[in-house]
Amino acid sequence: MSDKTGTRGFDPHALLENLADKRPRAIPKEIEPEGSDEEACPAFGFVRGTRDKALMLELRFRNGNREWYPYSLLGPCKYNPSVGILLKFAGDTVNLVLIRGSNLDAFVNQGTVNLTDRGIQRHRVLWVREMDEDELRRAPRNEPTIDGIEVGEFESHETQHEWLGAIAPVFLRSIE
Image (tube, rainbow, N blue to C red; front, side, top):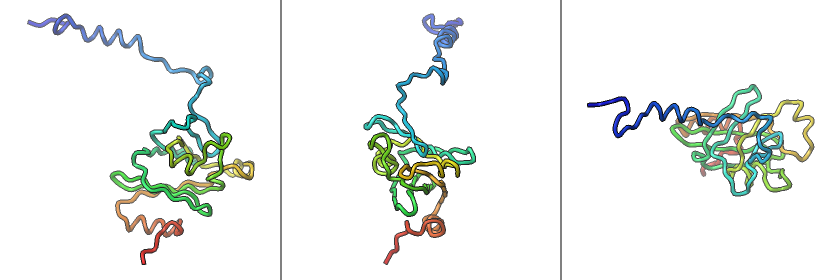
């Protein structure tokens, strides 16, 4: 013998209706609390707390496209001031991300964070974005700028090697 309330008088439909009335509502941007946990410069955004960590790195492209990569898949990173930052994300496939720009290791936020060792290396950077030509021209001389972001997806070491050899050979290691 069964009734609508299920076992022991529990009515799942009533519970769902009750929960639906208590859903959190989105906070409009104009009244969002000022105590945000994110700060930004024109080139990248980062978590405010020195011990806070981001879960993913968002790439914002000039054309409006975006991609997200989990920090949990981040492997070796390389920085060469004349070329940029090379990130390797390894999952089902390997994704190489080349961030090109100037002053990528320059400090922002009163010297507490930069894009390299105080940012990406510590998983504090939330997003990086390609800046347009006007922004690049207007940027102060010592401020980080991002000229371009290039992404390659690979299933073999050979194709990674070819791609890097074509766009940033300085990151290749010769095996002798």
